[in-house]
Image (cartoon, rainbow, N blue to C red; front, side, top):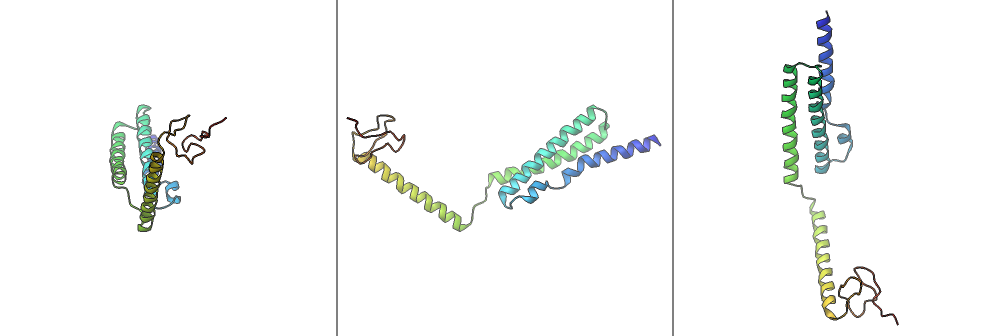
Length: 157
């Protein structure tokens, strides 16, 4: 009779430990969809699996489970961890691209940024000899303040 009670308690404990591993975290289900949300869910899942592995080791050391049950549980957890880490690596290796509209907006912003850099560099070379006394950045004759550090470029006197 005692053996049956211990077996039932052990089975209930294993189910309680393994149940969170077989359902996605609630936070991941409620978060936004898409690759970033999938990556976040996978990271949470990986952390849960690693936690379950640590708990299983603790249960073995405290004689809550026998060696055979521990090895079965660890084998399942390791297999699942390998799958999750593989998915994480795949997502990180091939980041998804945005929609064409977003990609065009990014390209336009980069083009504008490049044009701005060209204007700044041409302005910097337009009046050689004038520099910020604080940081040494070249300045044009029209500049009243340094674009980098904000130092006043007007001569006091």
